[in-house]
Image 1 (tube, helix red, strand yellow):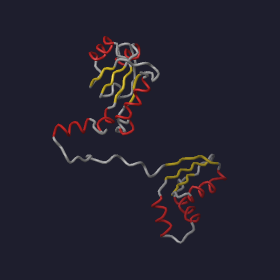
Image 2: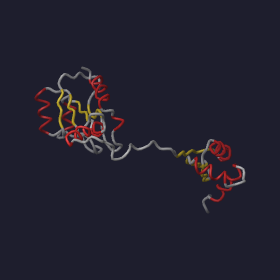
Image 3: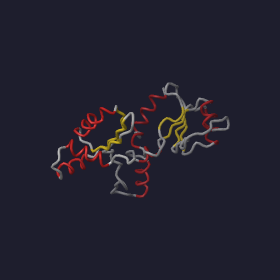
Image 4: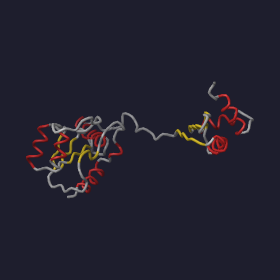
Amino acid sequence: MRLGNLIDILEQIAPTNRAESWDNVGLLVGDPEQNVSQILLTIDYTPQVAAEAKKLGAQLVIAYHPPIFHPLKQLTSSSLIWNAIRDGIALYSPHTALDVADGGTNDMLADVLGMVDRQPLRPASAQPTQCKLVVFVPQDAVDQVSQAIFDAGTVAAVFKAPEPAHFSATRQANRRSANRENSNESPKSAWKRFCQSNEPKQ
């Protein structure tokens, strides 16, 4: 079977986009186009497991814990990762994606404990509702650009530099609404007042 097709199946079982943000999951070593006929399953990819995979002629090792977790600073011939690449052994890790999958690690542990009413310890992190935008514009376009961003629903801060002007804006829709409700000033007037009060002092 083509490795890429096998990964598609693994994604259906434990979607990697549900893994924790700090985790390192999915295909860590290998070519999606390579063929796979032998697979070895393990908790940790140790030297003993690597030797067994080579002995069995496995083209893929699925390790629960990611063999690559921290950034690699060296990749030498004494490294398990180096040898996996040299021997054509792909490495895949589901880790926390498998933990939260239906019927995954957490469900299996709950079955062992006889748990019936199951709930997450904490909900998945929500998507950010704010974003930060930083742009550089010509000096004579600052007012036009800042007004356009303000009209789009942002509260912004302008810091004028000699050339070019540095403009940064952070989306804060709630604050914008509150500012408009509590002021009789026009948006452009309030904006200019805000910018003047926040200009860097010489």
